Length: 166
Image 1 (cartoon, one colour):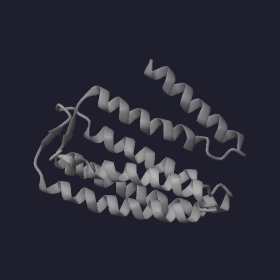
Image 2 (cartoon, one colour; image 1 turned 180 degrees about the vertical axis):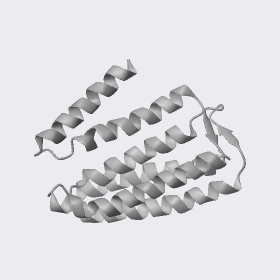
Image 3 (cartoon, helix red, strand yellow; image 1 turned 90 degrees about the vertical axis):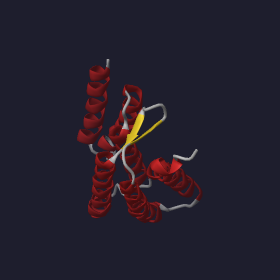
Image 4 (cartoon, one colour; image 1 turned 135 degrees about the horizontal axis):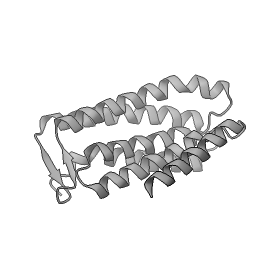
């Protein structure tokens, strides 16, 4: 396990997702805390990801996962975009009264899927990242349950992706 430091951003985001799920289950009215902690976790993961800029091209898991400068930079952009989405969407969620616990956790799951797809060097690893990302995005597309257009978009997104994947 000498190469575990290469996948520390993915490990940390997975641990943060599980921790935030547990926190949300055991603490009532924890939407605001989970939202702030998920934004903070993305900032921490961004700094952990900066550590991978020091390494040259590295392959993990029988060359199924590739860490290089481009993948590290793209992960940096993805995490930065996630921070931007978290900061810019809080007011919208509060105005539409859909500020719930699940939103930041689904967003973190989608970002994890994107990070796996970025570093994939094998079709199966890419597919795992794609499924992790798309399952979270299905739910996010239909997140506003009171709006019929939101439910319709979630259903269309699911059907179109199911048809395109075979």
